[in-house]
Image 1 (cartoon, rainbow over the protein chains, first blue to last red):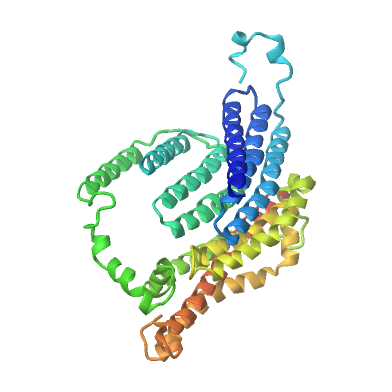
Image 2 (cartoon, chains in turn cyan, purple):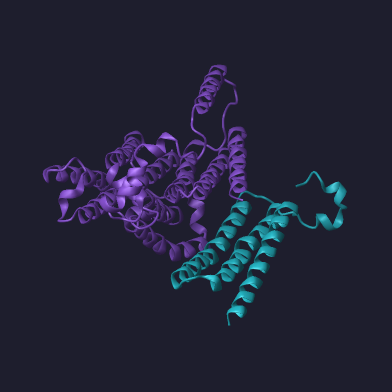
Length: 114
Length: 328
């Protein structure tokens, strides 16, 4: 039973860390605000939740487990909301998303935009 | 590994500070100041100063940017001029050089021979278990050994709130019954309002937990007061200051701000009446540790009430000012 829990938590932690890494790469590489925010949102919500779920089987006591669960609940509530608020604030200050530019133009001429 | 984390955090602090100095957009500056607070909180946490980290996270990254944002919405978003004042530059340089010279004489970081570690700290660490009897030494230093210093800190918070009231609160045409248009664009945000309705009660409950758990873990009156006020400020941002004023009587809040400080002071006077020193709690109960428990609980409550009330007063006063400005 224990080895099963260990493998499960290793799996969750691994996927979570991988998503976090891709999120960081996305924030650096994506062209405009909205796509970057998408990358950050994935990191914030899914990766953090996966890492917390991965930590849960390793919790030494019921108290620690419930604390992790409460943090998970808080993250699931707050980070999508903060992403929503950010996107809405960007729309309000009339920031236009870049549409179709990366597919039409080659990457070399695209440098001055973002 | 810890050294590496410390170096990363310190260099990020330096970068953030430089960005704050260079940026002209004050909105971004306030956000960076919040990040600065969060970074220093992480630094404190790696140094095992959890209580300080908690305070810094609640104040520096939580309530400070909020209050600064309200102040910005009154004054304006951009810095006006960028003239270099040579006198100010010279003054800052001289003070900076003096500070660097001063650090030369300081003991190395973490040295056990440093005066701070040889003077009273050993007594706090060794004796507080018997004398105070609570697990969190930081709280026993803050609320019992150094209770008079903490009294001063609470008084400073109180004076800050009273000054804000004196400067802005008595403005002509107090808009107590006027239409509430402050931060009006926020009122359409359905998602934010629903989520905040779910989150505000747990935030308040957490504040109470922090308040009364301060003897056993990191926490105490200052953090609890700030968290409680943050819940109410969140409510007034999303639902309008008018709704907050309907829910909470502002006269009561002003009264509570003074009441918390008074509770603290009266505890000291009562301890004088039992024949102890000012804020020496030993006369409150049969055994010394029980008496210390009672004293610490009461003065932490005073701290929490004053801090929460003052934060709410400052926020509401700023928002009222904004309303008056928009009407003109």
